[in-house]
Image: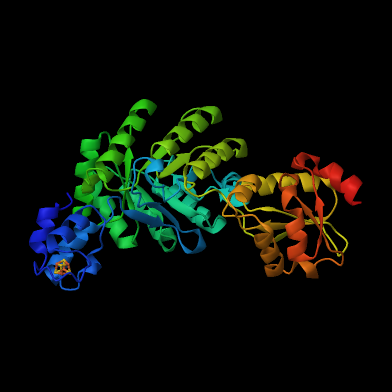
Length: 445
Ligand code: SF4
């Protein structure tokens, strides 16, 4: 358990020197207990106290990293139960299964299908981040071969799924340079699995049938020298799974109960694609750090990935696109130039309507901190100066030989000042961008 303010106070120098910015050591201790202060702010704390206090100040949910290179993934390190309290930090990792019963072309095809589960949504790349190789054969040799094939055929992070320490030892050695997640140790295999994880430098999943058994198991594994642990509950209904994952979340974050202070993994492998979509999205909401699904159908993965993207968006920060000039088609020096704001939904709506016009164009995206045209205008984030500055910053006048700027119809009122600020002729575009195709085809041309 985390130390209380008074327990922390007993470890501090008690000189009330104020170097930490607090009036007393007690005030600093209380702030540290509530995670409002950092231990480094006290320069005089002893090494022994540092060690104890650092443990107390550690995040309530440990960050776990697996995979390698650019395809390394991170789960855990969450700080709040509800997104509106702050935000969620580590988007749920979606993994697709690869059975070790597959061989030859079937195995290659399954790995390639999983690799291909990558999409782009409102300018952001989303996709499956891991392959879960499953020891369906029950034997070590096919499992090790399938893991090796997954390593050769995919850059994605790997999860090795077997209850057999022998199969795990054979496979982990083959792919240890990819730092796979090993799933899973159970109460009767904890020591053997922990040894394999230790020898290969891999994080380890702890799997039990209840929260109480899981807490005991994670402590047992930690006692074997494994710090990087992921929690898994088995044999539960969907309802009980969600209920218990919610309890794990509350106990780890609100009570700082260290034995459950790890991210979770769930295996959604029963039922058809529809059933898996529903179950996976429920578990993404509450609170699975990793979800393994037994499908490689794009129609099934896309809604799951969309759910991850939405839930892990910072609720206090609108989704934004990069402020710059976007080329639609292959515009030249005679092409129209228009501007909009960097609120993603605004930009992508404008972009699709300009594309629909088939008139190659330049869209200047002005940085309005992710707000829409009218919101930005009323908040004075979109005015003649911000537009003129954006035109200068992105060298708009070098793109075309004309000097005509199309502005959104909703901000027609800024025409006069904008013409003065830029020396460009302002053309007032339609109020609704759905009218842009007609405008570009008939009025611009
Ligand atoms: S810097 Fe350390 S010793 Fe000084 S008041 Fe703060 S906690 Fe106490």
